[in-house]
Each structure stands twice: as C-alpha cells, then as structure tokens.
Length: 417
Image (cartoon, rainbow, N blue to C red; front, top):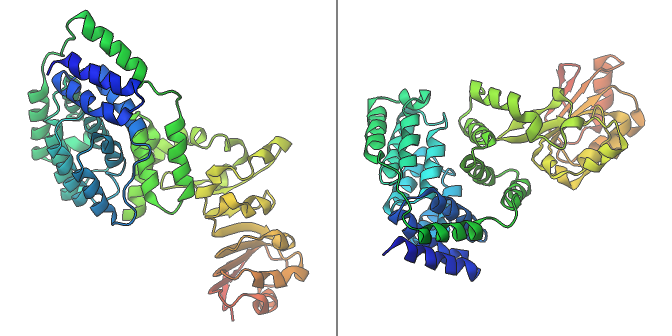
C-alpha cells in the first residue's frame, strides 16, 4: 500500500479525535518509508493514546506485561516501554524478545537506544540483554538508527563488554547503513505537514505532570520512578539516567558511581526547583532519583508558600534544626519516618508518628511524657546534653515508648528498659 494511503488513514483518525486508531496506519507508513517526521508523529500520538492504559495491578508485574504485549495493540507500546525496566535483566531480555516479534517500531528503537547508552548493563546478564536489544535494532530500517548504533560502538561501557557485543554493533551499523529515504512528490510533503500539525501535543508538560504525580502518590514504589525515567530518557533529559542509576544501586547496593555523583553535582539545583532556596545543602540527599533527606530554612514570608509542596512526598528523613515541626506534620511528608534536630520544647508540636527521632539538648522536662505518644518509635538519639549522660538516661528511660529498641545519649548507648 502506498505511503500516502497510510498517511491519509492516520490523518482521518486524528481529525476524528481517535489517536489510538491512528497508530496502526502511522506504523505502516513508517515501515513503508522510515521518515523522521512519521517517527516523531508516532511518538506524540502514542503518548496521547496510552494515557489511560496500564498494567493490570491484579497480576504479577511480569505476567501483566506479557499479557498486555500479547494483545499486539500499537496503543499499548507506550505502556510496555515505560514498564520495560521494572524487572531483572533476564526478564527484560524476554520482554525485548517479545517486542522484537512485533516488528520494527521507531518507539521501541528510541527506547532501546536510550537504554544501551546508559552505563548500567554489566556482567553476563547485561551482555545478553545488550545483544537482545541490538537484535531488535537490526530490524529497524532507519539510517538514523545506523548512526546511533555506530556511535554506541565508541561508548566506553559497551566497547568493554566483549567481542560479541562489539562485533554485533558493527554488524548492525553496517546492515542499516543506507541512503536516507526521500519523500517524492508534493502530495506526500503536504500530508506530512498536516500530520505534524495534528500530532503536535496541545500543551507541553501535561505528561510529565502526570508522571510526577504518580511518583509522589506512590513514593515507596520504584515502578512510577522508572516509568518517569523512561519518559525523560526518550527526551534526552539526564535526570532519566540519574533515576535509573540510583534505582539500580538501591537494589544492588554499593557506592555511588562517578557518573551518578557528576549528574547530581551538575543538575541537583535545577531538579530541586522551586525548593532549592530553602533546602540547606548539609541535609540534602537523593535516593532512587528523588529527594530523600532534607531540612528547611525559612528566611522570607513567601517561603512558607512551599509548605506541603509535592516534592516533599519522597522525603524519608527530615531535619528540623531550622524550621518548625509543621513542615514535617504536613500530609505531603507522609513518607517521613526519621526526624532529627528537634528540641524537647518543640516535641509537643510534632504530630507525625516516626520510627527514628533525633533530639537536641534537654531544655524542657515537662514535655517528656510526649515521647510516649510516639507509638512507632524504635530509635531515640539525643545530642548536646547539658547534663551528665547517666543522669539523663535515668530521667528519660521511664518515658520511652515500649517500641524503642535503641537509645543513645551523646554517642553513648543505653538500654531503653
């Protein structure tokens, strides 16, 4: 079928307000002529068509992914790619193989190229996953893919994964290298111009806002974070790589890589906007790609407008040395389980139940009974005591909740009972 026939069908579906129906003719048009304008339109339309689609939460994650892939609906590809990374390397390899069986698709091509560019593929499992991804790219009839694969050949981490990977990189780049396809005729040019206009998003940022909202609503779940990371990687945003690196390290352990530290040093101030000005650096920490520890320093009245900002939803450790407990009491801080920098005089103002509590000084004995109101408390650490630690331990011990397992005063450990 001619290119213009596919484009006319896609345009008709978009004009009827049915982006999902436009995907099949768009994909057919791209396979007929792998032009960048068609690939771009396919990505934009796919994002709109997949907004209300998700994996079935009643099933296991991998089983739900395979079931969705088995429908072979072009509108499901967005969800499949967003959730591709939510599995170990051997399951990711199985998923990549399933995607390969669906045929060439520029959306898959871009996602796999972004993954191959990350320095996270390591060991035998990572090598096999890289080879599986390259097998998919070998079936993508796009000169742009050939250039991207050739560039990967020079990448330090892929180049160091052994001869099988480097040989396959050369094979794929050579097989795909060809003259870029040309659009012949004014009619095709006019159809592509109309397609670009219809496929363009009505407003930028909507997708990102929804993805961030999912992260903030489920701070303990890595899957929304990795979905957001994939979205960022498709757009060349370095934060996508940072999220993937930190999520991988959270699962495997180990120290931050040089690349992770470089990304945080370069981009942290931007990622923390609009909170940057009120977050002292000494308390800051990122985990799994998002803010995990902080304190707040309020200098201006307008700073209070940031109380309850959604970015606080991923914070688990909050220091109150320079702010009132109301900041951590807010429902936006629902993930916080560690509070430090609290004084005894401010203890009554802390309404959030925490597991770990760090107190400073010993300025108000009358509020000791408030300790027992912390029913989840497991660790109590008090610093800068004005009195002898043994006397302080005897005074404090009767007021500790039964849940406390660790009790430390100025670095000296005491029995909580």
